Length: 335
Ligand SMILES: Cc1cc2nc3c(=O)[nH]c(=O)nc-3n(C[C@H](O)[C@H](O)[C@H](O)COP(=O)(O)OP(=O)(O)OC[C@H]3O[C@@H](n4cnc5c(N)ncnc54)[C@H](O)[C@@H]3O)c2cc1C
Image 1 (tube, rainbow, N blue to C red):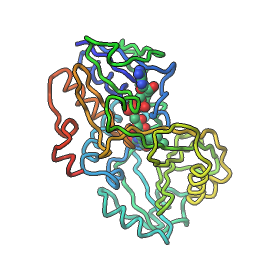
Image 2 (spheres, protein in one colour; image 1 turned 180 degrees about the horizontal axis):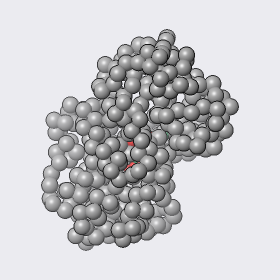
Image 3 (tube, rainbow, N blue to C red; image 1 turned 60 degrees about the vertical axis):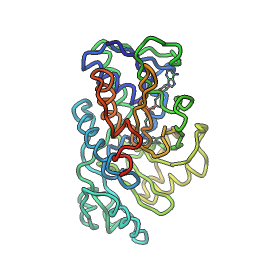
Image 4 (tube, helix red, strand yellow; image 1 turned 135 degrees about the vertical axis):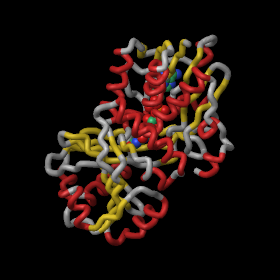
């Protein structure tokens, strides 16, 4: 079968790879002149099936475990060193609430935190440690996927902006993220601002989330002194420049995690708009010869692989996956 994948974000690249590895003849069309022009470029790269349950449900954890395994098998830069959550003493209620809504963690005290992250010694006296979670550098992961596709003969054509109507007669997999909101009318944007810092005064081994009633933040280490600090969650389709308030809040929270971030270099301020359906769950939607893979919301790296597997199963084998294809399925109601 010949399949045209539209969009070279994480969803499109994972889908192209799954389809090609199952024997389909695949091409990828990307409207931008370069890889990573969409939301995927700005992601933190956390692969956190259990932490993400805090504001979603069991479907995300189930798919997420599959996603984490896929990345381990497909990208050597996948780290599984866990996620550490901390809160200052006055915000202990945030930890209690987070623990109620999630699973697969152990409680850690100040000694436990210091053992995991020596540079945080003495700064926090309680936290949660999700040992089985992972992280990756999204930009390196996108490049690795593109390289793998190239190696197996799948061409990515850049600078090609297409609509489904222009490609009648082909089997289409639409992975255009928020750009599909004309066809998927309940798709919306959730704006996320992030900051990329460089500091050689602190090192972290894993993503650290600082819980706070107003300014929750996470810091993801990317090696060689790079840290991604994220991310705002704003109900908006606008992808314009980050606001001063958002950057002030992100940097203040990073500073509250560790004062060394106060001296860090600001390398980049970025904005991505997460594509999300009303229930914040991902979905495969059929319309004629087109299958849409969309709604990856705040878990696109975590969920793109399981969605890609299901998209390939649906296109090549005619299989149904009610958990992501039927809006009224039990899984969706539970989530
Ligand atoms: C600040 C921030 C932090 C995040 N952190 C995480 C995280 O830690 N972990 C995680 O799992 N997820 C995270 N996410 C979510 C994740 O980034 C998204 O869910 C994911 O990137 C969505 O991927 P996508 O491929 O659907 O869309 P996109 O990455 O937007 O890709 C769509 C692509 O389609 C192309 N396109 C659009 N229209 C056309 C057209 N007509 N023709 C051809 N090409 C077209 C675009 O140029 C783009 O390249 C984060 C998001 C943000 C903003």
